[in-house]
Length: 96
Length: 430
Image (cartoon, rainbow over all chains, first blue to last red; front, side, top):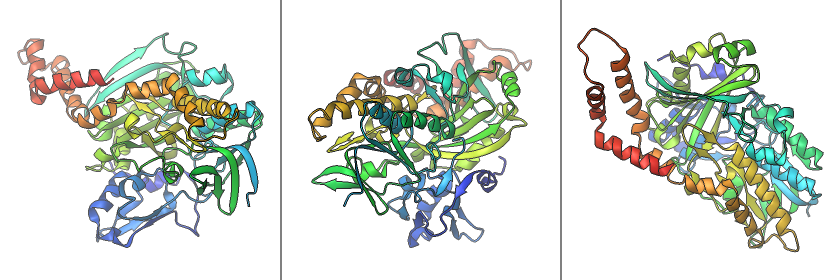
C-alpha cells in the first residue's frame, strides 16, 4: 500500500476559497463522536477530515470538492452546517 | 418586490438544465438559466462518457461540433484482485454506430459548449449566482431567491445536481440514505495523444472505456473506471457510501492503490496529473427518486436521481438530456392555458414514462438493491476467478486435475448454492 498525499493532488485544482465564510461547519460534538468522524475520514475524497498524532480532529473546508459525501453521512450528527459555497467561490473544475 | 419575472427559471447549467433551457428558448419563452459556478460545467464532473442517442435527437450531429473527447469503440470489463486482473474485451464495429455511439467527455469543457447552444436559442444565462431558496407562495414555487435578489418565474426547473438542496426545501425529496449514493473520485492524467493511441490500440478519434470490479473499491460495493480522452485519461474509483464507511481504506487511498495496480500503472506511466475531482453519484435508482413534480416546479437530471449503474455500463448524462427534454415539453404543454399547477405539470411524468427514462429506471429498479445485498460480487468473486485462472495458466509441474474439479474446488470456497443464488438474483434484476 503506497502512501497518498491528497494535499499535493488538491494543489493542482483551482479553488476560490471564501475566507469570510466557511460553507461547512462541524458541531462541537465532532471531537467526541469518533464513530461519526471516522466515517468522514474514510469517505471524504479530498481527505479533509483528519486526526493528528494525539487524536485531535482537524478539518479544513478550503480543499472541498463540494461532493456532499459528508452531508449525506453526518449531516444530522456532527455537521452544524453544509451549504454550497456562495456564488463564484469554491472548486472550479477546468476539465471536470 | 420581485426584480424581474421570467416564464421559466432553470437552476443549474449542467446537462439537464441546459437542455431544458435551450428547448424552451427555441420555443420563444423567456428563460433564465442560473449557474452557481463561474461558468457552466465548472462544478460538474463525470467519469465519464455520454451515450449520444438522446442529445442526438435534439442536436443532430452534435458530436461533430461539440468538444467531445473520443468515440468509445472498445469496452473492457475486469475483475481485479490485488495481484491479478481478469477481463473481457469487446471491440466491435457494432459499437459507435450512428445512433448508438458514445463519447468520453470532460464536463468543464463540454457544458460550456452546450450552454452556448442555449444562449443561441435566446436563453439568458447568469453564472456565479447560487440560489439559496425558492419563493414559496400558497404551496407553489414562484421563483428563486439568491442573496438579496428575488427572481420570479411562472415555473421553475430544478436541475441543481445530485445534492439538490432545493428539491429538499420544496418538500419533494427526503434526505438520501448512504446506500443510495456513491462517491466518485477521479484523476485526470495528461498523456500525449500518440501514446494513448499506442497503449489503447486505437486511432486518433476513438478510444476505450474500462470498468473494474473488486480491488479498486477495496472489495466494497463500487468499482474503478478508466476512459480515454483526446490527450488525457480519466481514472477513478466509485464506492457506495454505506459500504465504504466499513473501511479500512480511505477514498484517497483506494484511488492511490488502484493507480499503482500492476494492470493500471503501465497505462498511465509518464502521465501528469492535472486535476483531482470528486462527486456523488445517485445510484439508488427507482427507490431514491424524489417527487418529480410540485406546484410550479419540476425536477430533472441528477437532482431527480436519474442514473443507472449496471457495473459494465454507467448512464446518467443521456438520462439528464432526456429528462431535460421532457421537462421542457411539459412546460410548453402545461403553459397552454394552464397555470403550472401540480396537476397541469403531471404531463412531465407521462413524457418520462413514454421515454426510456422511467422505463429503464423501472426495469433496473431491483439492481441497486441486488448489489447492496450481494457484497460477494466485489469481495469474493474476483478472488474466486483469480484462483481458477491461476490453476489454468500457472504451470508448476504438479499433476493436473480435470477442469471441473479445479473449478469446483474454488467454487466451494464461496459455496455453490450461494453462487447459484447470486446468479439467479442478478439475472432477474438486470
